[in-house]
Length: 306
Image 1 (cartoon, rainbow, N blue to C red):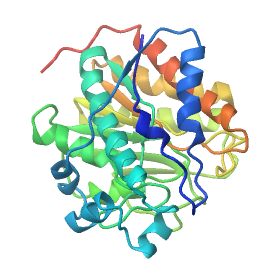
Image 2 (image 1 turned 90 degrees about the horizontal axis):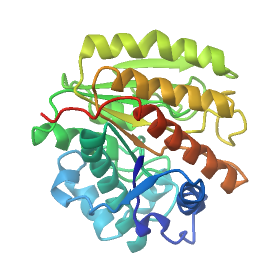
Image 3 (image 1 turned 45 degrees about the vertical axis):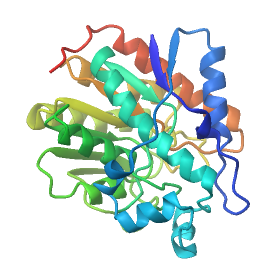
């Protein structure tokens, strides 16, 4: 059973300006529903303002809520923050929070959006408005749902915002596997960065992932994992520089789930990046990813609640 978080606001109308395409968020859910696999859909509440302000600058949060983000910040984000986008990002952030809560019950759950790992303290960036990974991790720890959280970021782009927002925290560990020469030009410092050369294929990627993730889990000893499961390391991705196949992405995702669940750890995934001229094919990459992770999770017992 795949427990997937989705909200109608995920498909906010495309702003008049900007290059980002929102089509895939609708198409991902269509693909999941058409797959014939057992899924349960869950609707998130909007992320409370005070949870966002605990991680992001309150002035910036206010700009987003009023849909009055300065033009220079909108340029960094990549699209204008309309009232519809403001509602959307509150629900996508609430989606990662809900996915984490569902993972604590079922072992694994997916957010059908978010993975907004470029958003920084005072601004968004790289198609990201609020950083759902950092906000969710902070809130889970603040209310005692977790004491140590591992954020695994396998998007092709470095999770610079997440690294910056959690820097110096002993209770949050950030692992980023990314293309060394891809966006952002100026990288932040994650707890551990694994920068991959252009053209890294399935075998090279899995060699890197398997060389780092098990040791990190054993050494850091988290009690919950958040996973940014971007599919943009795919060889045909428009913004990627790596060369993973469909099978390579699935092997990656199964490995991450297995490493967490074999240790009894709940794991929640967020959608992350995936770009291409064929939005339907990109959506299917995301859908196949979530279905494979749910299938892998089914091999393990549900985690014990704290």
